Length: 318
View 1: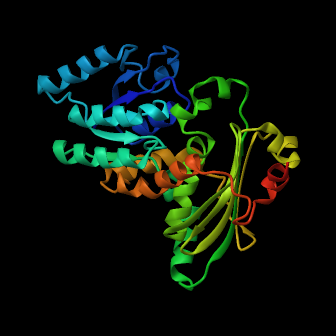
View 2 (view 1 turned 180 degrees about the vertical axis):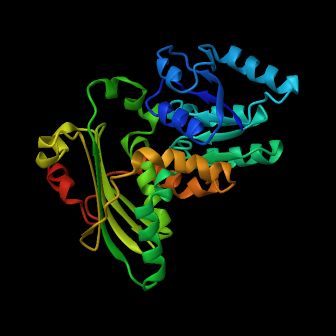
C-alpha cells in the first residue's frame, strides 16, 4: 500500500484521482486546496488530513517524511489549475515523492526541460495522465495504423464539444495565462492522442481561436487532421441535445467513426495501474502535445492553409 497526497482536492477532476487511489488499493493521507468545499473526500478517505494553507500542507508532508516510520508520502497527485502544475510537480519531487499530474502537464515546452533536471537531481519521477493512450479503442487504432502502409496519410476529423456555463470564463479556466486557452485546457489530450496514433507532427495551422472555440489543421507523419473544439452549448448537435447530452465527441478516420466515447470514467484507474506497475507516461511523452498547444496559442489565424473543419467553416467565414 502506497501513501498519496493530493493537491487540488476541490477541483473538477480530483474525485477521479481519489477513486483511482482507492481502486488500486492505496491510501490518501493528506490533501490540500485553498477552497474547503471538499466533502467528496468523505466518500473515499474520510481520515485524510486536509489543509487550506500550502505552508501547513508542506510542513505536514515534511514531518511524515522525517518521522522515518513508514508514513512518508510516496506519490503526490496534482489536480491544481494548469499554471500551477509546474510548481507543484517541483514541490512533489523535492518532497521525496513521485508526482502524478493531470493534463496539461505544463503550459510551455521549456518547463519540461526544467522538470527533467529536477528529476535527475532528486531521483524521483513525474508521471502524467494521458488517459486516451490507455483507451482500448485508441490502442486498437494505433496498432492498425502502425501495421498498415507506412507511406499513407489518413484523413481525420476530430470534434470535441463540452458545453460550459457562464462560470467557465469567469474562472481561472477563462484566463489564458492560467489555463493556456481552450486548445490547451480541453484539447491537449486529444492532440497527444493524435501524435500517439499518427506519429511525428509536421504542420500546425490555426483557423479559429476565441475564448470558447478553436479550430485548425494538423499534419502528422501518417494523417491530415481537421479539428474543432468548443465549450459553447450551441455547438452540440441537436440530436445530442435532445438526448439530454451536453458533450459531443467525434473522431473519423477515412470517413469511419471511431467509437471512443465509452469508458472515459475508468481511464484514471487504468492510468494509475500502469503508473504503479512502472509503466506510466513521463515528461518526454508529453513534449509533442505541449509544443502543439503552445504553438496554437501563439499562432496567427491563417485561413489560406489546411482544410477547415466542417463545424468551423461558417465561423471562420464570418
